[in-house]
Image 1 (cartoon, rainbow, N blue to C red):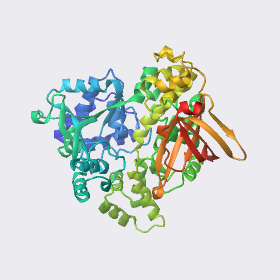
Image 2 (tube, rainbow, N blue to C red):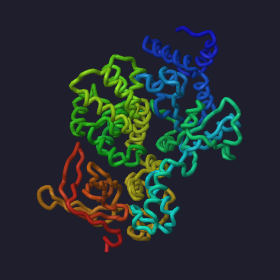
Image 3 (tube, one colour):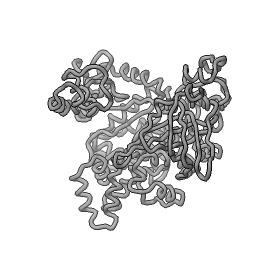
Image 4 (tube, rainbow, N blue to C red):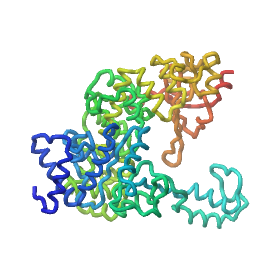
Length: 565
C-alpha cells in the first residue's frame, strides 16, 4: 500500500498496537490494506489509539463490543473486538466509510457493576481532558400537554388521557403553549455511557463537579470530538458471575443440550433473550448452533419480516431460501450494491438514506435502479431499515453472549440461576425467576431471601411477590372443554398491550399454570393485566410458528387473595 510520508509514523504506531497476528491469506491482507488506507485518509489513527489506551487501562476487566466495531479487521487485530469480520463475512462499510467524515462509533460493553469504575479510570488518566456527555430530555406531546395545563393553573394529579376542555383553563392558549414546548429541553441528565476525550483542556464553564460536560451526543459529533460509549451489560455480568474464565469465542459452535434448551424456548433467565417474543422465535426457527443464535438476534427486529408474513419467512428459513432477504443492515448494503452496480461504501450511504428517510437520496437510488418488477417491494423492504435494523457485527456479539448463557443454563443450571437472580432484570414478574431457581435446586433462603416458610404462599406473594414453598400456587390450570376450546386460570407472569393496525389493541399475557409451565394468551382488547395477579377465562387453542397459545374469548382479572377465597 502507498503511505503518505507524513502518515508513516502514525501507521507504525497503529501497527505496533496489534495484539493478534493476521492470517496469511490474500483476503485478510487485502482487507487490512483497505481499512488502513481509510483510517489514514480520514486521520482516525489517534481515535483508534485512544480506544486502545482505554482498554489498556481496563485490561483486568472483561469487555465486549456493541454495534458495528466488529465489522473492522483493524479493531479485531487491535483487540478492540473479538469478532473476526472475515470469518463472519462482515463488510467494513457499515463501520468505516471514506464517503463519511464522521468518526466511527466504538461502543464497549463492560459488566454493569464496573461501568462507573471504568469511567473513573478514564477521568483519572486524562484529568481535565475527559468527561461524560449529557443527555437532553425534551418535551414530547404528552409531557408538553401536561406542562401546558399546569402553567395555566391545573393542579393535582391529571388523568392519563385528559382533555383541555375537561379543565378550567383556556384551551386555545394551552394548545399554543403545548406546540411551543414540543422538542424543547425539559431537563439535562447523564448519557448512559458516552465519554469524550478532548485534544485540549475542557472549558471549565461546560463541566460540572461530577465530570459531566454540558454537551449532548449530537453537539459532540458536530464539534468532531472523540466519543467512546462505555456501556453496562447485565448479560455479561451474569455470564462472568457463572464462569469468569471462558471467553465467548471458546464456547462450542454446536452443543446438543444448548440446542434443545433453545428449541424448546426455555430461555427465561437468559438476559436479553428471555422475552415471550424471543421464546416464540426460538421455537419457530429451531436453532441448531451458535450461528443460528446470532441469526435469531436479528430476526427479532422487524426489518427481516417487513412486508412479509412471518409464517412465510420462517418457512423460507427452515428451507434455507434467504439468500436475497435483508436480515442485517449489512445485507442491505450488499443488495443495494448489486442492484445499482456500486461499491459497498456508496451502497452504505444509500442504506443510511433509507434508515434516516432522506427522500432526496432515496430518489437518486430509485433513478439509478431503473425499471424493475420488484421495485416497489424492494423500496419498502429498504425503508424497513428504519425499524430498528441490526448490523451483523452487533448480532454476532449479542448472539454469542446469548448462546453462552444458554449453554450455562443447560449445563450448570444451579449456578446459572444464582447469577440470574442477581443480574437478570427483565419484564417477568418477580415470582417467575424465583420459581425457576427453586426448580434448579435452590432453597431461596440459602440465597438470602426472606424466611417466610411459616407463612402461606398467598401471604408471601402479597408481601414479597413470590413464595418460598416448592409447590406452585394452587388452582391454576388449563382444562379442555370440547374441541379446541379450553377454560384456564393462571398467575400473571408477563404481558404487553400492543396497538396494531387501525388503532386496534391486543393484549398478550403469559400465565403460569404450574412449576415451569406457562401458557400464552391473546386478548383482543386493552386488558389491564398489571392490575391483576390472576387471569381467568376461556378460549380456543391455536398454533403459530411452532408455539401454542389461547385465543381468548373472555377474560377476567383478579387479585390473588380474592381468587383463592
